[in-house]
Amino acid sequence: MSKGEDRGVHATVLLARRTIEAFVRDGVTVEAPEDPEMSDRAGVFVSIKKGGQLRGCIGTLEPRTGSVAEEVVQNAISAATRDPRFPPVSTEELEELDISVDVLTPPQPVGDISELDAGKYGVIVMSGGRTGVLLPDLPGIKTVEEQIDIARRKAGIAEDAPLELLRFEVNRYS
Image 1 (cartoon, rainbow, N blue to C red):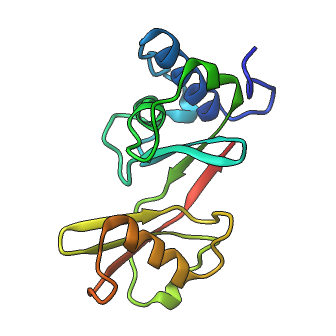
Image 2 (image 1 turned 60 degrees about the vertical axis):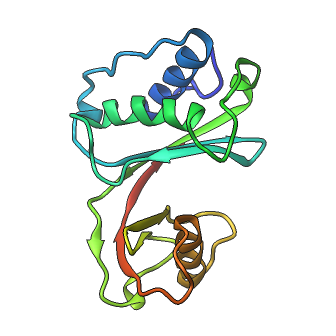
């Protein structure tokens, strides 16, 4: 039994782990299950950590597929193999990985930063055709200003550029 396949682990996390293991070991894409718990449509982020450090994170802000299960499969493969910040996950690493899945609510425009809360809302910053995203409740990020600054820098948006802000909430499973 692989790490994380304990009782009580959410179905999305089990699916993400199974997807990553099948793709990394055998180059196989698993079939998304028809699970009522994952049948809705939503944006999904899959985050991979190794030794407490980020190892990959890819997601969609809005659904691109027919179900959360399909989003998990696609984003798990991308997080493990296509995050440009990291080399692809190797078979030797599989047992060391911790996986979490964030299922997003639809993004909502924000009129003022007072409508944000770094612990509760993820943030989307947009300017000049560039978009940066940061999930909520991340270790070390205490303020909305830090959250916006990190998302802005990830997108390559100039410090003095005007920003359009959106927020979203997540259901986080790990």
